[in-house]
Image (cartoon, rainbow, N blue to C red):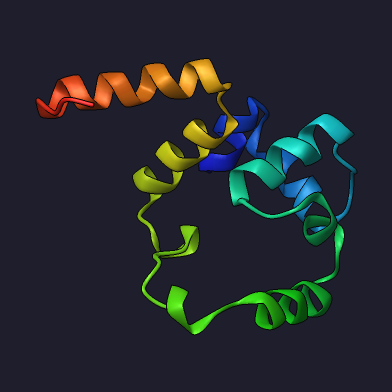
Length: 105
């Protein structure tokens, strides 16, 4: 499970978070919100409330965007790692990717 790897916790711990058997710390919740690119409030809402919030704020002009759940497991892991990184680490990741691809910033 990619998210458990990013959170540096066991798969069972993350499963307990998902099923409500245990509650993650506020720092873990903040990191999850960052990984999934949602507000902390949206992360804490139940599924129907969050869906209504997304539907009310989604614009047709963004239909072409590939959301994180449309990605492969490796792509989700990479996006999660990037989103959970500090700004300095994100810069290093981008620089490394540019170097690998032979791109210039």
